[in-house]
Length: 294
Length: 306
Image (cartoon, rainbow over all chains, first blue to last red; front, side, top):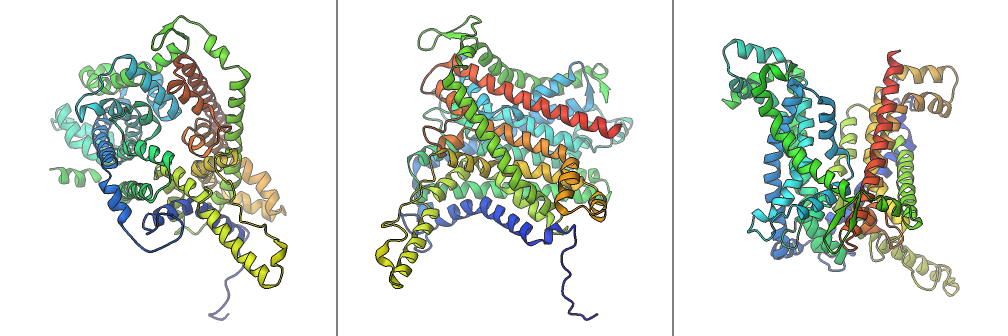
């Protein structure tokens, strides 16, 4: 028995150590990441041809920044995302609490209807929104930002059910006795909601809001059907640029969007990890979140 | 849980806003499209809903049946490839050392969070005739040619007279490739979830009793992971069937899927009733697949309970 024994060959169940398994895993990740990685890398490439590496440059970011229509689309996207996030978080939370707390007739169909925006094909929802806004005579040509109303409404419709799912998952671990205790101690409905339930839900609220934000920022298909010539969002603009040609400018714009979503996702995952860790501690997350609230 | 009558005021406060929003800005638009699917086009914007089934009959036209068949074929092929690629990946993640697992899972989920349009665009940049794959191929061609010339075989033009770039875009292969690229994580996650729950002593028992790895896989792993497989297949198939962007950007004139036909009815062809009928057919197929999934998972849990 020497200290330099070789590692034993993989056991029958150690599939992770088999060479061909590792190779499959590696090949899959290369397949998934190589296109995005090249796209990001070549946004910094100092060559119009976009193929040969000719040195590092930020000029395409500068170009994208000076492209007024691109910037306008970007502003539109952020405005819509903020408005949609705010409304979907409120609506999603209300729906989650209503479904979690109450029994009511036709609850099953209600839940199914609430899940519909998550499951139906995007194209169906897109055409529904197009038909709807055209039919009810939704005013067009309003001044900014009111002209983004139709897109924002469509985004809220597909985002708030996702928020409801996330918040409801968080509520499932809530100890109802805390709510009863608050009431026994004389809290009103509103006080119990604000000081007990909301602090408990807060990680779910943040995760849901971040999800709503990325969903809105990333959506192309549904927006494509609700946007008009003066209400272009970032993905719709990128789409028209892609149809036209493949240029480093589009790479730069795409890289920015990837970076934004990555940051938001990491924050969401980090928050989730933190709550999971706190729950594992076993101590009341309520008091902690409650004191932060007060 | 309390009944809604115990505290009506609170119930209505929570219940009304989201429900009203859902009805007004989601169910009403869908109902409108459903109504239009039984309508007839009269003039440029006028549509009369007169209960005709003509739009659905027109969807049975061989032209559209072919597109439906093609969409099913693309989605099925995508699902199959995702299953074949996703299974080893899911197994590798399941049996990876525990400190690697979260990282591998994160790497699988991360593409989800990258914009679909951007991922498709990245594929275009890689696969087009002046893209990175062809550039690499041309470089290999040049080197081979030079090497052949150096050993005195240059005159034979063994690798062709000139470099011909591969036409990898704007055809059916490109669409399926793109669909697999986009939907692979959908398959890996449910497979992983099923495999992770699997009791490893069954595998050990099977191997101890003399079954080989392949036999163990076929008669132990696959049956036990079946709910995960069904789930993954349906979760991959549904969005693949309704894809719009991938065939639109990567496909040629010959590789249109249902969603592209629907889009055309609403944008350029301006035949809303027919487009409405097509989009509801797509929706019914989706519901059918979801019902299938619900039934299989229910049957499964009933079996486990028994």
